[in-house]
Image 1 (cartoon, rainbow over the protein chains, first blue to last red):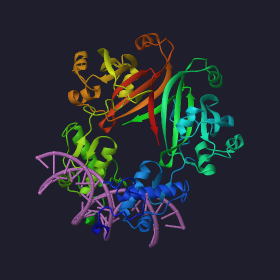
Image 2 (cartoon, each protein chain N blue to C red):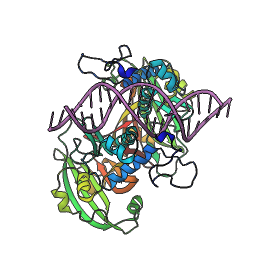
Image 3 (cartoon, chains in turn brown, orange, yellow, cyan):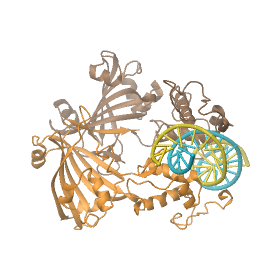
Length: 259
Length: 259
DNA sequence: GAGTGGTCTAGACCACCAC
DNA sequence: TGGTGGTCTAGACCACTCA
């Protein structure tokens, strides 16, 4: 029985106890969580699929169901997994999800709105500018893909996005692929490039529309726009996308929850 | 043993099983959570104080430690309680907290910043306008307190706030009280009026500065400003404050985390 | 009815803190 | 040294889903 084993006997090889030999205590369920995360990262289970049942995982890792449970609890709280009682535990996905855009916090002032239409402006291979490179942990001049697109609500332009992606992760990304694809862009990233967006930080400001943005968003130059700079991360907090959005907030607002 | 009792025997009188006799299932720990919330609301334990230990609570409610544990877990996740290993579980507070403003998501572009200075503009008794009344579940014309204040960073005005509070909850609130008080306003609300802010929703937009706001924030009229409309709630999701802030985001940004 | 996640219990032991 | 929260186990039973 594990209860009789010496403290923190680390049934799992390596994995925990990084760093010096100090009092580095890592509970079993955190170690299990790490193993589950690795399996997710290595695509052992794909987005939308069910992972093995708690009992199976408990057997695999030689721990009790309760311990696996706690690991899964945390992953579910972080939106990496989704639990469905009676059915199983599933890998979270940006595709085939009821909420069309999981990371887009824009809400129309009136009504729920019939969703947003996408319009691709361009998709180019470019070299990383210094600022973009730094945010993404790349080197200035590294290969990147730059995408510009717009979102419209009932034909009215609302969002202008400029997206920077590391070239080495998105080799085959073309305007054609983007245009053919149905559903959220992050869904395409998952299925076609194996890149899953887990978490993001946004920096929000009010800015005045420059000439180009004003024209594209069909507002007078100098109009106040919401500038939303998003840095998205995949597993293990690795940044993999930088995005700068300009939102016209005359008919929509950015919603947030504090606690 | 409780395990032998009939299903959902609701050891706690009343409390659960609201509504029809249907399959209204409420797990024990949710009921405990409700009882704990009520004790918090009734100030049985005050902000900053420790609540009884898990064992004591388990005895009081006649459930196992694991069950109160799960209740406390959820309350801690909602930031109503704070756990400190080896010391106890404490009632969350907006005062005496390391983070000065728990609900203010404003971050300076450079450096951590030496905090913000407060400046009270005015504090008046007014009648509720229709819109404000609706948001707070009051009737148009009800007594309210309106506070206007500014926040400065190193002497530079950054935030202009207009705050609406239900008059019946904040009877003794005066400009003097606000000026005398040290620390966050929500701390004052807790200690002096027994009103605890638990959760808030914000609606964020980019707007152009009107003449008055421009003067107060020392920016040119028409400058883009971040408009942050916050509806704050206390226990049981009761709305108790409406606040409209205008942020100058030329040296600061609003930070947000997505997942 | 079989399988999954969800709840609840009881008990042991560990890590952290204060006295 | 004793108390608190934190981890882990083992086992029972409940609620939900689907064939």
